[in-house]
Structures are given as structure tokens and as C-alpha cells.
Image (tube, rainbow, N blue to C red; front, side):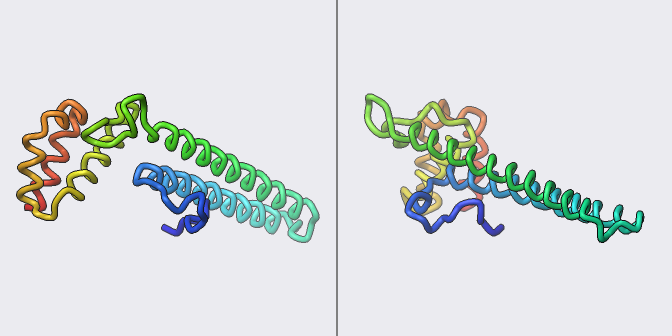
Length: 163
């Protein structure tokens, strides 16, 4: 998927976390859907005008411009929403009175379970390159059981698949 809703090489977006990149991908998907729907609407308008022998009418141009403006406004709304989500995520990931959020020292309980899954998975994937040691360490992690809830078994199965 080509990401063009934000410029990932710009300083503002260059150091995004995995959770933030997932937000960017979701926003990009929404943008692509909006643009596809707009293109389909323009095509339907064109065919309707051809069927009515009015293809050279200014009404066609006006309607196509209206569809394009509406799509651009929706894309801008998605982009603004993404900026707010990224800003909120950045605020939530800074930390609390115990210090910056970092698993397992100071886990972030404000994250959703799927986001927690990513945090714990990244922690264990970076901890060691030995898949057996990684799985054994994860199996002995009592915090992960409570922190991940139902996702604990899913991550265990994922780590076991690397062995």
C-alpha cells in the first residue's frame, strides 16, 4: 500500500511507533476508499449524461467538480483526524508519574489489548534472537498474562511458531 496521506519522510512523521503506523495505514485505507467512491460517482455521472445526450453540458462539469470537492473535504477530515489521533497517542505514550511507558517496567494500561499485544511482542522480539529463549522468557512472564488478557495465548502461539 502506498502511503500518501502523510509524508512519512517529514520530521513530524519519521519516528512513528508501530501503533501510530497502524493508524496511518487505517487512514490511508479510508482515503483510498473515498477517492475510489468519488471516481465511481464521476463515472456514473458521465455515463448518465452520455445516455441523456448531455455530455457537453456544463452541468456535468459542475457535478464532477462538486464530487471532487466533497471527496477532497472528506480526505482532509480523515487527515485531520489522523493528526489528532497521532497527537493523542503521542501524549498517551509519554508516561505517567512512574516514568515513561515501557514494558515491563511501566506498562501503559491506556492502550487497547491489540496495542498491548504489539508492545509486548516487540519487547520479546527485541530481547533476544533465540526463539526458544524468547518463548521460555515469555512463558514465565506473569505480568504479560494479566496485561494481555486473552491475547496472551495468541502471542504465546506466535512465539512458539518461531521455534
